[in-house]
Image (tube, rainbow, N blue to C red; front, side, top):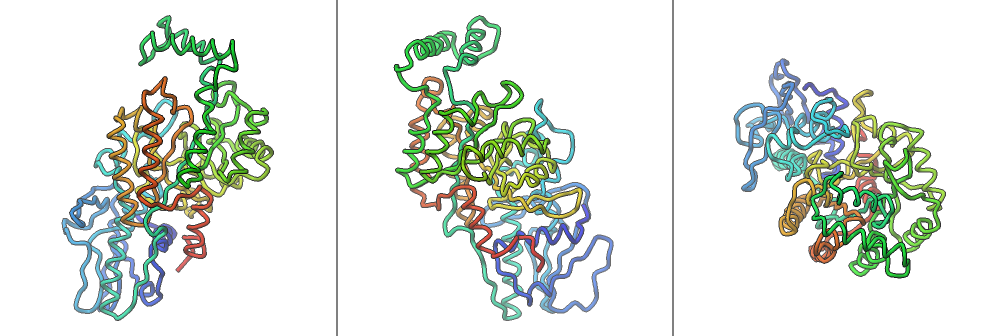
Length: 470
């Protein structure tokens, strides 16, 4: 994989989130393409050799008792870099290509490794094959580069200034509002089919029958209690007690019942969105199936939500984490959205792009970075509890691990939890687990923020776009 100048600039641009570039360092950069001879008589240079490999062939390097896979190695050398007598810094492996491969999502350009919805799967990805989805390896690559720069700087009496996005780590909690009525007639009809054996279910028939009876009682007597999926006041009050303000992404009704079963304009939804805005929660677009590749569809959804919200929504997450790279980013950017937060594997928690910072996607058609930001989604409760079948204890252990990774780099841990997966009648003990999990995260002293405040912080930290030229 030969990197163009735009691609190497893309990697160096994101590196600016971690250090303040110094011309005495950047002017020393020398990039050697594969097959090109190494210049003679190098003096005081920082040498990046590109591997030219078409596909990753990872080797592990040891770093602070961790094994970190480098996707494009230059040799079997286990060292990170070396400094020669002439003051030249030589990186032992091609960290630039390794970072670009993951950050840009280039592996997802293939039509292979897709599920029935066309989603790119964890199973079969490079993260799966080499088992590193739990590590933000791009952050490690940047750390290797910066330690090399610091070694070079000490030799040449230059000061290196580092950056961290967060003093400890950032925490972004979000919710996708797909369904708001557990006792919806369509769901009740579906449960009847499950009882009759015409639809599959993992629940017992007695449990399903009990849910149907609760639904009938709810419809016969609307004053019997709230629908367990209309739990937004409980969610918001919990977050306010903990000092959190989350982002809620609302799904539009489109293509019959494939997406939302409610309308933004309904009095109940309008009242909810108004309360969220008043109490400083963020409201964003939860893009429908169609909107993942259809610009007019997404623009109509954004306008419809903005009309109810009273201002233009700036963030989006695609329904079902359905994404086509780079087409979906192009559609979102054209709609005027500032950030997306879709990129996590639907079937596994972890780092889909190997990075725990916000980043700009790459437009392969134009060979340039895009303006829209991506806030990586690290964990969705559906991935952990449904796809992976983790226990509550295992899920909390994983959250702890992701927080520890974010703390190493002053990065971000982001968690998605659906309002329709907080019903104890469906998932025993889940509301208590969720509440305890949020309390635990807050106890780790993060900076809690919404999606747009995260992007504002990232932009303010560097004072410009991360892909500005050196």
